[in-house]
Length: 152
Image 1 (cartoon, rainbow, N blue to C red):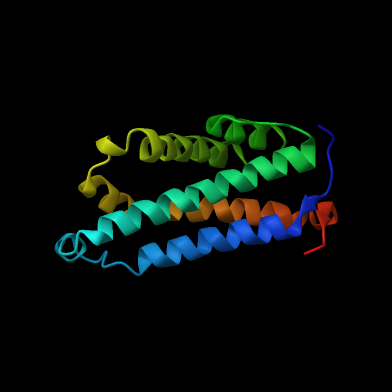
Image 2 (cartoon, rainbow, N blue to C red):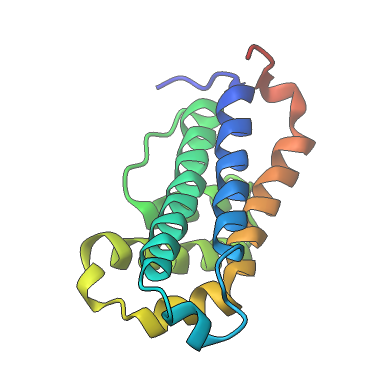
């Protein structure tokens, strides 16, 4: 695989998707557990939006590695490792992204082990972790604008 220009469209779409999913989660009644659990659909909406936000983050990371560096990466935790090795993410953000990869894997493969209470806690108090990674990727892309294919 040869390095190439990053797709501005892919980057914009994935970051917009993350933002949209976080807005949807924050529109849920997260101020009090009783409100959140009053409607069981809140759990399913939160789970779906969180999983999709994480998928978009990892899709973007994979795109940066594939197009920007010619690296084909399939494992989610490897995306974090290589983004750090290439200077896209700090060591701290790479470690956070590895943790998010583990959580994404739990949501997808061990969904039966993710309790409604746990998901509520994540959505109510830890969405900043997802934002932190999205912001770090956004900042890197902004600093590397010459690496973008401007075609939409």
